Length: 301
Image 1 (cartoon, rainbow, N blue to C red):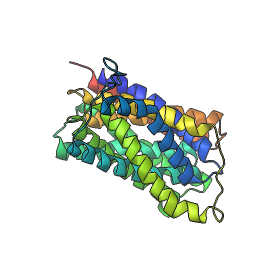
Image 2: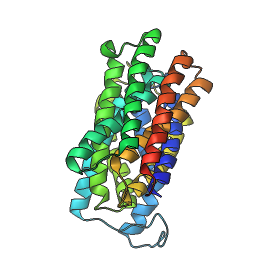
Image 3: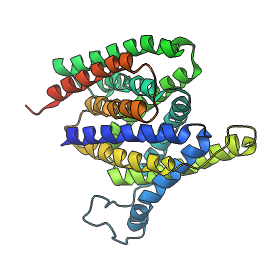
Image 4: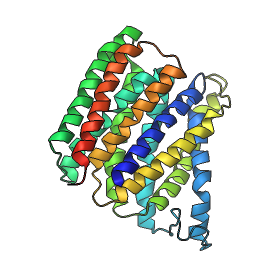
C-alpha cells in the first residue's frame, strides 16, 4: 500500500511542478510562494479547528487528528523551516530554467536520501533497487550534457545552483519526515506545517519583497497559483500516509516520488513547448527504467 501511495504522490507532484512553472512565468516568486502557503493552510484549517476545539467534524475520516504537545509543534516548526528553505531555492530555479531540466535534477534527491537512510535508519537496498539508483545517476549525467545545447552549463549557472540547494534541503526534509512520521499523526503534521509556513513566508515577503516590489518583477494573479496548492496538498497527503506504514523505506519512497518528472516532462513538451526534447527523452527513459527496477525490488516477498 505504501508504494501505491508513493506513486500517487509522484503523479500529483508532476502536475504541481507544471502549475508552479505556469504561475512563476514572468511573475514575482515570493508572493506566489506566499499564496501557495495561504491556500494550503486554508485547505487544512478546518482539521485544525476541529481538533483544537473538540468539534469532531472529521471523526472516523482520513482528516481526523488530535491536538499536539509543545514538543510535537516544535518538530513541525523545524520541518516547516526546512521545507520552506527548499521551496524558496526551488521556486527561483523553476522560474528561470526549463521544467524539462528541473525535473531530472530533482531526481538526485533520493540518492542523497539513500546515503542518509544508510547512516541514520540502517536501511539496505537490494540489487534491483541499486540498479534503479544507478540509472537515475546516469540520467543526471546525460542531462548535464544535453542541457548545454540550451546554454545551461551546470557548473556556471546560478539557477542550477539554486535547484541543487533545493534538492539538498529537500533530501534533508525527506530524512526528517521519516523521523517525525514515526512519532506524529500525518494530518497533524500537514495541517500545522502549512500554517507555520504561512507565518514564516509572511515575514520573508514583508522584509524582502514588499519594500522593493516596485523595483522588481511585478506580481500578477494566475489561476495556476491555487492549483499549486491543490496538487501539492494531495501529493503530501499521500506521501505522509505512505511513511506511516512501518514497512515503508524512505529511500524508496523518495526515489518513486521523483517519478513526477514523467508528468512534468510531458507538460513541458505540450504546454510550454520546450526545446531539445529528443535528447531529454533519453534521460527520461533512464529514470523510467530506474522506477521499474525500484518497483521490482520493493514488491512484497
